[in-house]
Length: 268
Image (cartoon, rainbow, N blue to C red; front, side, top):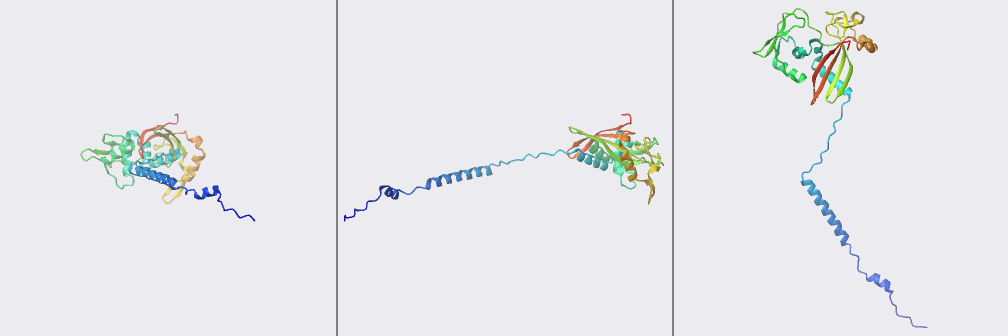
């Protein structure tokens, strides 16, 4: 029996065993350097004062939204009174607004009139006495010393109807900053006419008022539900009859300014 040979290790296995451990410090050092650089960049951005400004895009209003705003604007500043007094009578329009809901409104501040005209029309006017709309003498005397209008109280007749009983949008158009609104209106003044008309003077007749009367707690009055239904059902035939009213507005910030006003006759 042969003597066993002395064990000799496998050279490859020996090299693997004797191989020095892998150095993991280099990837860790790279990661630390990256983190330090990122922190440095964040600190620079934080202390540089640089702000990211998001540009706000203003949504353009629809014409329906504009119509509602203009109708509210006209109601708030009682601009239907222009139908009675016209652009030459904007002082009277201002007085009508200022005196709305005020009992025994006999004296009106000129300063308040000026504020109204500036805000609504962007105009300045020179004050003077205001004559009655039916040429019945002076209605308001202007006191230049105290800057106020004083009602004379010398008129036995009633004033004009300056608010329609019904109003409907004929058209609305927008071009750049200008908005053109055209309205149909119905007025009723039993002192001036037995008819429902398109004007406060009772001239342009649309309906016989007697056909639309009903009893109320205060006596006979117009049945607006019945009148509205009749007008809407026949609107295509009636919308160009009588007069219409055109307004050209521009928006000044959050407010509107009335730049032009025109009464459109049936022929136009």
